[in-house]
Image (cartoon, rainbow, N blue to C red; front, side, top):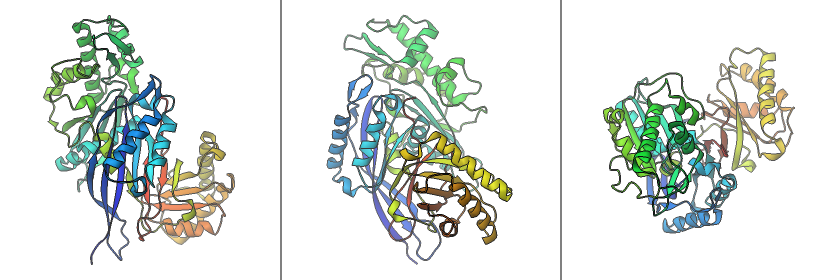
Length: 482
């Protein structure tokens, strides 16, 4: 029995603190005919690596949207593809760029203009995971059967993703956790005379904490700048090795930090600064920022020298490679779809968990609370749909599904009947659940399975891949202005 296969063309775009770049990839999707198994992406090949260009700005707080769009248009042309030929992919704004005033409209414009099903994404945690997949750290964890950290150091942030295959018998790799820090090489910039032209707030926090004589317009001595770079390197190492964490690490952390330390088998460095660690530039001001000095401070750090460090498969392009090749997931084939709703973008997710032991009354209340949470956070008139993520409903038997469907149908009466609802289950029961639910409600409805998602995520769902029923799904974050 031969496999049915299809090749998707994917784009990845990364608009970062310092640089903007794109890649075009081919993703091979294979399905075993006549089986109930989900289609699988069996091969990923980057067919065009775009030029790394400086991210264009109108002013320090505003991205030049038209120039960024022109960069991506030129990369599509260089890659020999048109937007109509792009099937999937992701645009991600990263680092300090995600905090600029027009980051959100930028990323949505690029996603809408570059292909049929291209996701708009932002957020340090997602950036960490994409970089780790693009750099090869996830594959390294599978190879070692252990715990590997990818440390992606860019212009504005350092994002660590820890991939763990240590507790798996079949080398399946999980993202154990992410850790993110407001430290990067572009937090201090210089002019051609080595005078300081800008100090970002995180760098100013460190300068004040260490009491360094570094101010805008000054030409600090090398000793002060080296102390700043060494302090930043110490904090990055602390981010990887804690807890416990230094107080300054906690101040500069993005999101929460873990409570338990991990034993790492190896480390991979990626990102614009990460790629310099293996060979720091001789001129510390080569890039008119602190990146060269920070890379040198990390390279000579005693703790880093003790680590097992592997070369990345992608360095400065790690995040964009991950965005272009690793964002898409494929649902199970037994789905229940309203094709008129597809593609559906940016449906906020709320998790509905621990349903297995709920009584009938408790089930309905559990769904009501989830819907109340969503509508408190998101105006139903301002979004294109909502998503309920269910881990387990209990035994996949008709009577049990009937009880769950009754409770969900009753709870859905609290939201506008025109608002599309996506139900996502981890169990393989979407088709049966969808058929039963459609008999109870008139709500626009999509039910898919075998896709993990949780609170704070957003879902993009595309049209079915070929004729096998499976749909492409992107589980993502949209974190701007933080």
